[in-house]
Image (cartoon, rainbow, N blue to C red; front, top):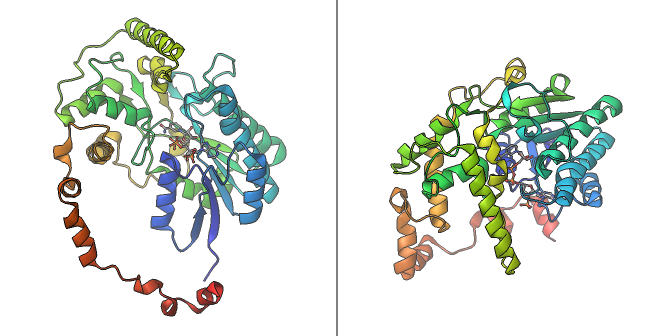
Length: 387
Ligand SMILES: NC(=O)c1ccc[n+]([C@@H]2O[C@H](COP(=O)([O-])OP(=O)(O)OC[C@H]3O[C@@H](n4cnc5c(N)ncnc54)[C@H](OP(=O)(O)O)[C@@H]3O)[C@@H](O)[C@H]2O)c1
């Protein structure tokens, strides 16, 4: 049997990284071996970690989906989002293997039909996140042009998909609507944004790894074909959840911004009392709720990549995502309103009221050692290893 190709994925515990790990486990278990070290084992902040790990594993490619938390200070953003990817690129270039780097629409201004080259100018005024993502893109480009780096950069817009443990971006919006925390619409009419379907992305990554000649040295927008109006999306979630809020009233930007400044001021006061409190990172992007940002998918569409699920959009995915996240948040006690939608609520109820029943059930299902793992059933090479 041919040797499996080894891929190193940095950021495997995150929304995007987790989706990629699952994809390879499900669709290419016999040909691909994806190693996803935690940030404890390989921290992007430590050049030595990167060099040691990649020398040890000798992968065939590296994918970087890591990012510092949105609210991180300049040093962390610089080290994780900029220096880390550059050090990976230096390592992959030395090893002569491809590097796939995930970037963000934060590197772009607001506007419609933005092309891959329409990046923001690098200025001190940008957020730490945007600045560091932009810097990584710029340096990787130089390294490809001047140093022969084999890399591809994939820019994502607002991502939707399962496994977002940090509840960021679109999932924060879903949470806030479900939690009835938004009284009215913090946007204006016809504000269009691009969206990225997380579960389509691994198909693209796999395709570009298989076709380096076409994709090397290039940046692509990986977004759904059609942009989405923010108010329509919020009102669709609301009607799907059968809620009264938010009302269909548009809050003007000046009023929303005034509210945000008030929250900033209040939190500053609270911090003076020694209590840790930070403005929710999403509020940093208040402007973006009022300004359109649509990324052109023209370059993606004219490539050899074929969308594996052309009919799927954020609206078609919504029912499944709503059930997934509401059950998750209910189990985590973050939300209590939607207990009725959970099919498997009975386990929680039994655990709560009759734990002995669960204990008896597990005992009845069997506690003997897993037969297929016992010594005599293992391949000879493994038996030898254990001795
Ligand atoms: N989610 C979106 O809406 C969105 C939109 C546009 C672009 N993107 C881009 O997509 C990529 C993935 O985002 P995501 O939403 O999946 O992020 P995420 O869920 O926040 O996950 C971030 C990952 O980065 C890892 N990480 C953090 N610090 C690290 C360090 N020092 N060394 C190594 N790993 C570290 C984390 O590992 P630990 O948990 O172990 O710390 C985690 O696995 C990022 O490049 C982001 O800019 C995301």
